[in-house]
Amino acid sequence: MDERCGVVARPMALAGRLTRWLIALSMLMLAGCAAEAPVRPPSVRLDISAAAGLNPDRQGRAAPVVLRVYELTDPYDFQRLDFFELCDHGDAALGKAGLARIAVTVRPGQRLTLLRDADPKTRFLGVAVAYREIDRAAWQAVAKLPESVSSAWKVTLGAHGVTISRETASPDTGLDGGIGAVKPFWTALPGASRSAPLASEANGTKKENHVLEQ
Image (cartoon, rainbow, N blue to C red; front, side):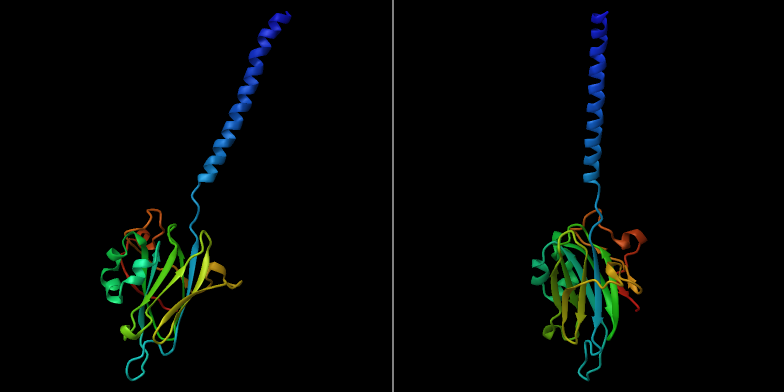
């Protein structure tokens, strides 16, 4: 009888060990899947403000400008190109360093906020402004994004130059932008990730130049 019990008990013990092993393996597999789950890309908030005397003519009359914002992996080519090269051939000239861009018409004295879930590969933001006297204007600026962290930026359009600087999100608006913030359409560039969130693709439009009302 003891021998029989021994024969029966042995496979039962093995079965118990096998069950525990399978449970442990399943938990490891679930943990691995969770670790590989896609992470939402960092969001970027752009608070844009234009001077009342933006882009004046010879009589001192202010005029609107077109502001272009680029998502970049590297700023070298963006900074190397002159304004007309960037405007006319920038998509190709930036190559894989260019991920996405948008063009926005900004009026003198206007303030607006743009929201964007950046391409996961974005490391820099480049801004370029079509000033009337482009040869004498500080028409471009670059900012390096923090890795894997959402951020807010202040884009200031002066009379003859543009600057971009990081700012602390105010507690009442946060990175969601608050009332008046918009998520406009972006155009994909050659280096864009397939997973990049482009509103233009989602809405089936190729519109590039957007006049955003406050």
